[in-house]
Length: 103
Image 1: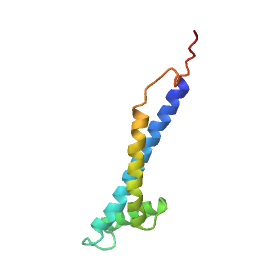
Image 2: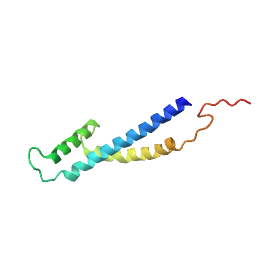
Image 3: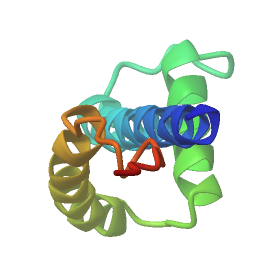
Image 4: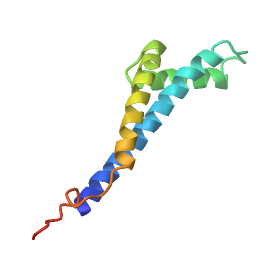
């Protein structure tokens, strides 16, 4: 049973990490178009620094353009919606707990 609980914990952690990565990508890809035409205060503009940070984050995930991320987001949302019920709503059965049933 310990091995099953450990595996289920890894599945929960993987789902949470995937959701957090999706939120980071969504935020970074939506922040840039929303603030690209701001009133720049000069060399030390905090909005420009944040835009640069968002661009670096998107590049770190392997996407130089926002269109790749925007196309990837619905696919990741669908996969997340499909996998969450399987992870959170599975029942413990004697087979999953590897209980031997002798007559």
